[in-house]
Length: 285
Image 1: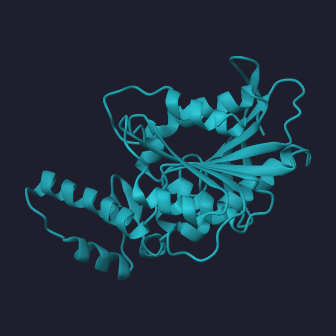
Image 2 (image 1 turned 60 degrees about the vertical axis):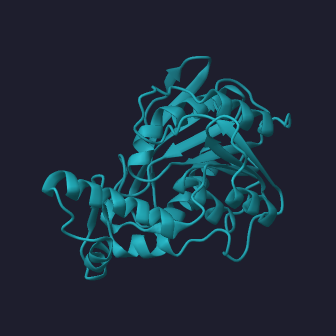
């Protein structure tokens, strides 16, 4: 572990590496409140996938700091093959990411000396999907925050492959490999480039198989499911269905830009999203 770095408003940020059971080192940052806190629960943040993580980075850091100011201890971390953690992106999968979440939760519990009774999860986009899947088998998850989760993995994988088709059109003025061609390349042991990230067939197939509305099992954790979009939009059908499917779920819509994409607006914070999430955590919504 490295030395703590003081951040504004009396919180402490501790960059660190922690060991995975495979021997890989995962990088993370722990956000501590300075002084005594009576909070008996912490949060592991589960980032969005690939390039979406990059664009959302500032918002995730800002909210980790906000929770620390409220007395929560928060861990943000890089999955294997991403950021400053060990590993190659193309060798990771959905299964490896779920194992990384479990590892991160265990590390946070250790670093707080077992003081935290509950290690909750907050995820964005595909990270929210993974957070829900991880919560089913992870003990001590009392609360679960899902920001704009990916409900259907097959649709999401098609979106990622579409970026490859767009790149082909820009570079070659034509599509040389169709989506089916790209999937076959992965099946044959190759990888497909999506916005600079190499997708393997293992990752593709495991993600494609995810359908949160059809999956067996659920979670008993109190869950906040947040739709992020234009002002006045009703909660979309899939999110209403998720609310009905989960035992203790509140689905809401907030007006924010899609800050996990490359947009013109600089997003240091997501005010409406932060307010809604914090109010729910504090029992005010």
